[in-house]
Length: 161
Image (cartoon, rainbow, N blue to C red; front, side, top):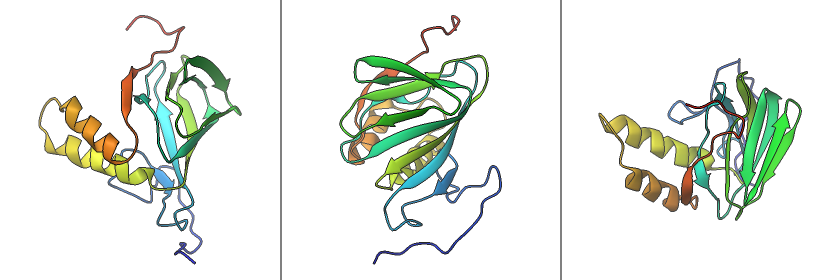
């Protein structure tokens, strides 16, 4: 049997990984590789990640507050508080805050390990003083089976930037 962490409790804002881009509530190292869970917050109308896919990871978003607009392949869907978005491996996806209120989601990655990608991105971003090289970020994503397919999306009803 693979290692699993002893029971633990995290306070609001705490993370199991301090070096990752997002606050991870559970990492692959905690769950025997079964899943990673993280909190994602976006400001009103803010775009999320670039359009990408995962070759070996499924992702899900459970909306705790606000509204998310997600691109799933060629389709755009919206989910409000209490809504759930499933993003299976192999499907291009991106998402953005679809409203004037902050967006808070609990995100899951199955199997776990997404935190390794985000930690390497943080390491790279902290090592460059100015503009990061998009090609380097793409290379990092490719190493983790998460190729970049396009830019971030903007919610359809978002006011002009």
